Length: 102
Image 1: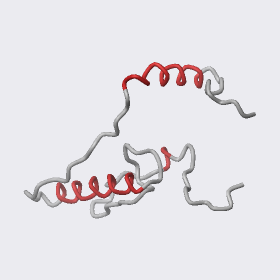
Image 2 (image 1 turned 120 degrees about the vertical axis):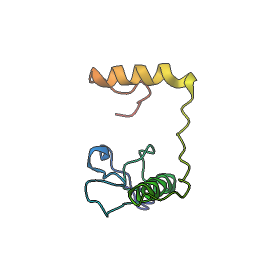
Image 3 (image 1 turned 135 degrees about the horizontal axis):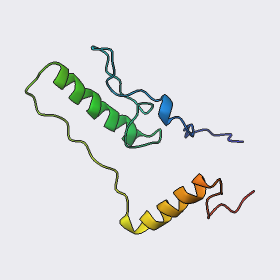
């Protein structure tokens, strides 16, 4: 039980999150609920979605204004073997190797 729910992130919500700009020509979305490279409800995700929405708006308006810079989340290459192992265990229906609570 979480008596102080400061972080609300729904696991598995990626497929239900909207893109910053979709099929509705004049609708642009930004916020921590929008699909971005930051798969977590954070200010960083909201900031990235705002940058994407602004860029989409500028593109739709054929504006020659400079586009917002976007950043990639740093993923330490040293951890890649652990990510691959975790993905394989998940595919096999096994728990994460570091899960100790049952």
